[in-house]
Image 1: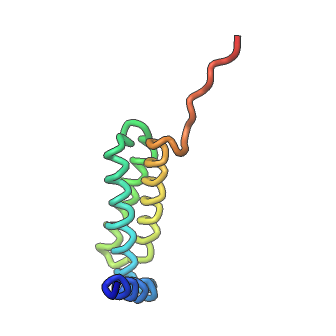
Image 2: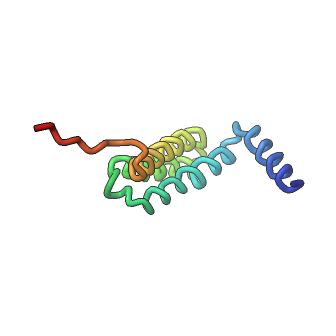
Image 3: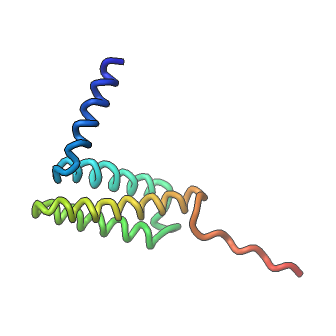
Length: 107
C-alpha cells in the first residue's frame, strides 16, 4: 500500500510538472501513442483501419522528429493526434465504432 501511495505521489509530481516538455513527451509519445499503435497492429488495424493507422504512424514519426529538435510542445500535440488515431483504429477493429456493415435492403 505504501508503494502504491508512493507511485501515486510520483505520478502526481510528474503530472504537476506537465509544463515540462520532456516529461509530457515521455508520457504521451512512447507510452500512449506507441502503445496504442502496437495494440492496433495486433488487432489487424493495418487492414481494417488503414487511414487511422497511417495517420497514427506518421503523427508519431513527426512527434519523435520534433522531440529530437527539443520542440516538445509541438511533439506532444502530434503524439496526442497519433494516440487518438490509434485508439480509433483499435475501436474499429474491436467493433466499438467505425463503419458498420450495411444491412441488406428488404425485398
